[in-house]
Image (cartoon, rainbow, N blue to C red):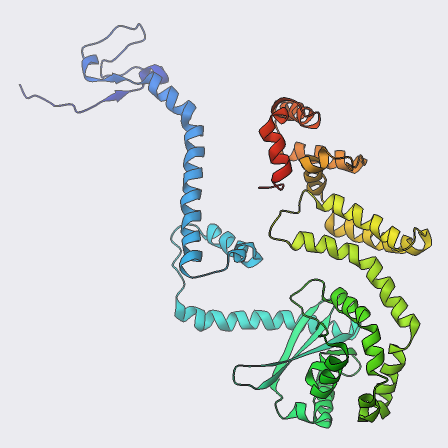
Length: 430
């Protein structure tokens, strides 16, 4: 009689409630002759089914970590700045790869340098064309910026700006042009004509830094530098005004000096107009007013721009404090600060304020345990909205509210000395 070797045999009769010709456990629970060759795994299968969800979640987490590590390695090995991960195009790229699924053939350097580059240029040109269509509706500002490259060439970039976007127009080598005022004027005039004279509202240029004698004269009388507008910094307009106000007397002295009287610009209409402005008290009064209303807001911007401390838990209170400082700066006169408050509130409500700001403000221990805690209703509303969104389970929300009460009243963990020490020495988010 030929022997048959059975490596392993699994039956699920007890789950399916059906008979089997293998002779395993019957409906009566009597073991048959083949039972010694099979294994009853009813309990194991049930446990597997129950643990499947947890297992899948663990697998998903591990898979994401491995994927993120591969992406991180790409950043590290190629020296890519970390803030690139915040780029909308980075998110768009990941979404496209995920939508494609497995088996995506990597693009090559050749594709990047040929067909894809051509297509990208075409897409960009389409965007530029759409912005150009709006020039006639809103008007534009022509912005020029002169700089020197490593070869010592004087280059000028020309950009066209309106509310719909900024378009790079061209960059030219102006090494010979900047030495002659007439040629420089003709260059600017040609740019205006290229864009469309009817569209151009103003031309913005770092003029003084392209004319050495004016710059030298200013430096001689003020002993300082004026601050040039820079598109990469957030408070240049404020800093420029602040520096000009601090240099009022040296500037007035400059325009009464023999050097100024002896130069050609003192006899030109533009030079006379500038001198008139410098000696106009209302000009300096307007500048002082602008600084009084913007200085507190610049402090808020500096706080949000800082890399030393997360600003989320402080921005709500900082905005309120800024409004109060503006009120004091303007002599507590409602007629003086009311319009400024209105502008701030409009920007805050439609662009800046989020429920998360109110929540972070409420949960910031430095503020919660201080005398300056605001009791405004929108703070509680923001907190409740965030709790409902972040904690969908009702029982967990109840538990969270209990924890909030402990936090507010400095009870439980919040009474420990270590917790108090953290409140004083750590910024929110660390």
